Length: 163
Image (cartoon, rainbow, N blue to C red; front, side, top):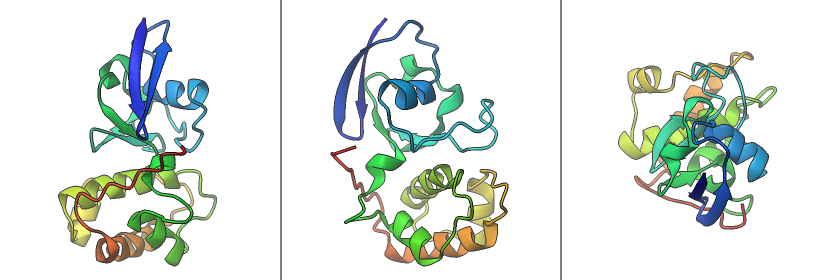
């Protein structure tokens, strides 16, 4: 199956054996963007979260055929080292990660939340950020989400064109 994907502002024409292949594996194994992580394979943990047309999507269970013609953003496309997205900046300021494995998924889920709810309450965070962190850095993440809201302009799109 031939498929065309737009990932982090770049077009990719790919030949995929099966359109039901999870988008996660196309992103990681074919496009070599390793920031999006595999966690559970069941869309439960959120380590694989990325954006499809601005919506947070668990890519481990999202068939690549559903991504055709849509704008896909991975953690590599959210911001750059020189110009981090407000969520990335807040994560740095609040020293959120311990092991860091799940953090790209949390950051992508947070960026999508802030585009819908620019000033989230603790209840908004509890209702929307349902990813799992084995290190339990939830307190620091909550602080970082509130900090990111202070830094964020709604519907801000920062794309790293070099991803």
